[in-house]
Amino acid sequence: MSLVWKQRKKPKVIASLVEEFAADADAQEERELDALEDWMRKQATHNVLTLEDGSTLSKRRHDEACVLAEAGRFQEAISRLQEAIELTPDRAVLYELQAQCFMEEGEMFQAIVVAEKA
Image (cartoon, rainbow, N blue to C red; front, top):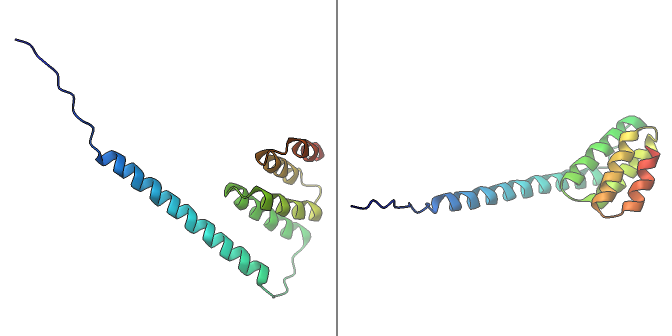
């Protein structure tokens, strides 16, 4: 008498669930990016005069740059950080974030130059 262990076939349900989950995550990320772009477009075309001091505007530019960098849009993040640096040049975190964006873009020399300013 011989005993043979049969291996069960892995259900294909798991693979389809993983694909469905990944597609849902991609769709959610795309919706978030679209919402961000809509918001930024409205802010750019908004003709209301707002009175913001330099530090508040710098903080807003910093927040926008973080969102852009997380979305992989490093060149736009670099320009937002440059605007923030011009408003508050004493904030070292802005230089650090800008250097990280330059590194992600592969511009190592520029990243070093900016990081030394921090």
